[in-house]
Image (cartoon, rainbow, N blue to C red; front, side):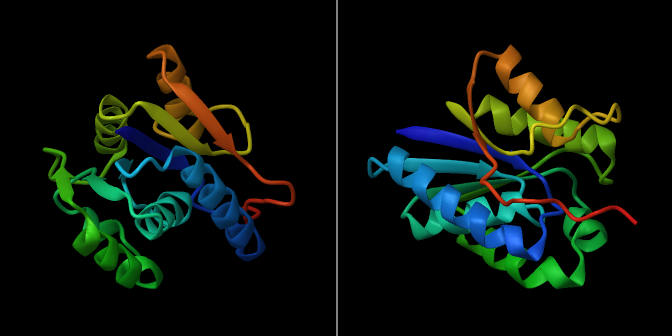
Length: 164
């Protein structure tokens, strides 16, 4: 059994979603031995794309939610239907012991994701940590410090939304 965790950017451009989806599909096919497990926080963007493709590949999904209020206070309306479908499709849903979604809750969830993983899939443009903690680059650094192999997925032509 192979357990892949995911981290990745939430702010992919619309054009990048298909590129990332195809790259994840190929990567998951390489690890599919009939007992593939994926661990995701199913945030908008990379985490949810990974979860969808994992399920399409016949894998089992484990969802880690950062806090008890995550669904009601952090999931935006444009992501709610997919979020709910992924929670429903998950073999297991783990809710971290935080009442409120905040930086500490996200970091706790990221740690829980890595603790369950054999490898980390990072949908990541290679940028440095923001300094705030809990971001994609921080999770990659933590995974590497734990000795996990990190598969970076950033297909040619992929971009993030420009910040306004």
